[in-house]
Length: 226
Image (cartoon, rainbow, N blue to C red; front, top):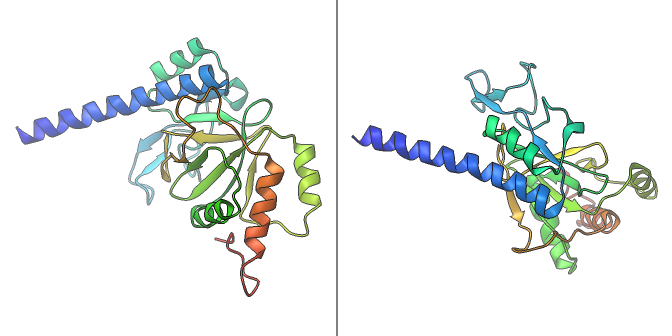
């Protein structure tokens, strides 16, 4: 009896998870006008240390469940009917945001560095928007920017932490409540409830603050090098 009840609970939990992904994808697209698409899913296996592998054809995929695949990134849309069609057929698929254009971009860094960076940014009184977190990386969402502007911004810096990654035009980012090979995707800083559209800081302000945080450690060490 206990085994049967346990199975029922697990099935209810999985149904709830699947509904949450569809609801989130629709909310991102319809309420905030963020183009999304389903990413590659995970499949059970014993071949990896995490116990999961990617549903894409690459048996050695290094980012299982964390990238676009069938459809490709260019298929990202804000059309509710298309989104419901996708997730009705693939309820376990992660929610992938196509960054750039009119959609949010992001600056990401390793999780340990991300926690330190947010504390440093809070200390300056800087206003931040949503922050997406996984067990391995944190991503600060920023206002849309073009690759040309990003290049000019980085060129003007004496140095930029190599741990930073930029998710701009032509890029993508997993959004909550997706699950990837590295674990659960969640909000470290969630959008304000009831927001018509989340406020996003300018990329230059975020990069300036992160560079300052990385070079202000006594002894010349970088707090963003992890």
